[in-house]
Length: 118
Image (cartoon, rainbow, N blue to C red):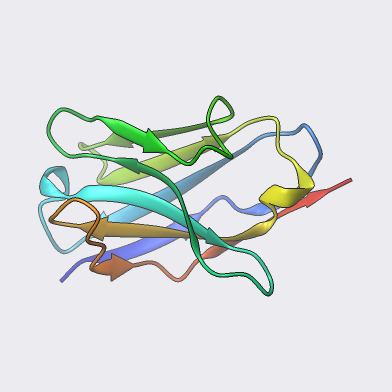
């Protein structure tokens, strides 16, 4: 079992930055693929970014490429999402996810709210 706890959400103005953190516990973190998803009001949850264990390859949704960066610190069992040049359409609840197989997300955090004001 893996427990995930997100932090770092909040209210920011258009063009601003936020860094989300997700602390993992309960399993060897370095063997987990880690991802970020988001869900805006009235919309389905969507993929934002992922980082693969081992080589650390990263994948991004087209909507955030060039603005968001996912990274991980295996020593701290934490994955980060640096969000720059934020837009109102980035407003959503952001969820951290973890999985043992690529594109299979077995564990989820409780979410953290990000609100971008114009």
